[in-house]
Length: 229
Image 1: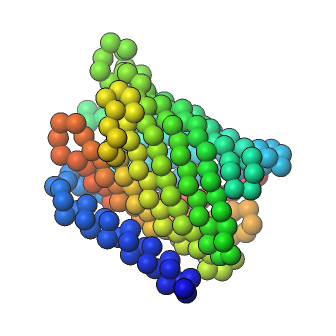
Image 2: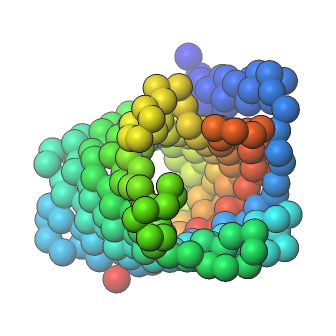
């Protein structure tokens, strides 16, 4: 089968999934802009370090609502199997304008396989998230999530790449929910300035399920700049 046709079929399937989700529920919609900066350092032949900085502008791209900084380590076990772990520290804006501290710790693995110009990857993470509220409040209890992301990347040229991805997150603790708590669907492109730097542009739809009100649907425009040290 023609490679371009195969990739187009995968993108079409992802878009069809989004149409089905959009028709099945009513949503609280929002448009968002996410800006990422990444610094990458190879510590040795097996171990890589990455420092990420996230900026999120929500409420129809009118309110600066979230800021995160997180270091991440990736250990290459084999050509196709990697271990990953990281810690996230950030600030998130509430409706009253107060920014609370958010902390996350995560660990998991990545399976990655190259097939000529295609790259398939699957990432699984266990993520614990907590806030800085007093422990006696409901929101203070740490929450454990299981995150699963599948990505298909296609190299058009040495400069240009395109990809599609789907991520499903489920809450494991407290109140386990085996149905997805959050889903994300990505379509993106990457421009490689050099072997050590790139600019990534993507569009993502995000569906978030809540316990006591309508689910949220976000239309997210993302920009990422990455540089190797």
